[in-house]
Length: 303
Image (tube, rainbow, N blue to C red; front, top):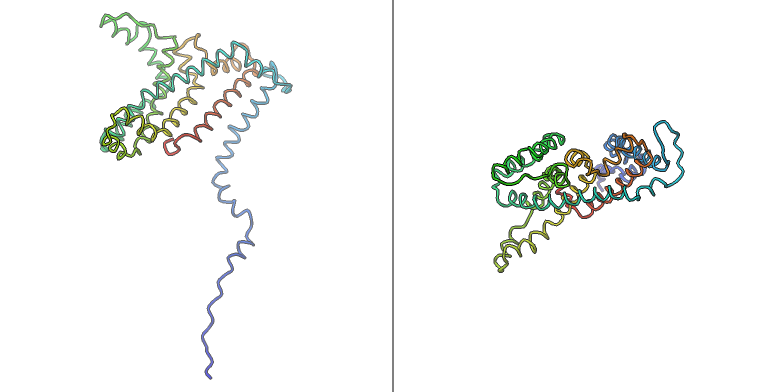
């Protein structure tokens, strides 16, 4: 009887054994190498400063050079004083008003760019609309001062038309105009990204079923773009809540906001770092809530 001389096939390496003998750190080495630098910057520039501010917020009437000795929540109780609540309420008013103005002005523009402009010119049109973001916010505010002051461009044009001049500068209306102009490109780009994904077949089906344009807008367009609307509105609200430049330059002394109040506590004549830190923590908490809502309800692909 002949004996087979064929060599047996090689035994494959035991992959499960290698996985068991491998170091547990090998699975974390790649992510740590990628996230380590950004995580370190986040720790040094955000986490640690926030903890320092929280510690200072627990010290009453602390000034530069004083010993840090946390002793209670007295500074947080002072946040709810009538004057401070009035300032915080004004900040919420400006943020809410800016968000509404940006939404009302930005949605038609984003709709027109996404659905009416040809693909050849769409990106160029969008670029031209966000071009003001390439300039400094300080320069944009000074430009609005030139336009809105009593002898500015706007009142000069109104005088030529025989219309009485408008008192807009150093008023709440000037602050809303400047802030809406500053944040309008942000909401337009987010709404454009959401409207670009709009299923146009549903618009055609709505028209075929006899719906008028208003019904089509509210029952088809708005529900499909609601995540983009939420994302853009929350982004504008969060950004405008801590705006410092526009209210300071366009609103004058009567338009003090939370950002200006915090500035006065740290660098102004009062020098009460404890109260300033407490106000900062309240503002950080409010912004954190806004970011949480943005991540939950906003269109992440449009942000």
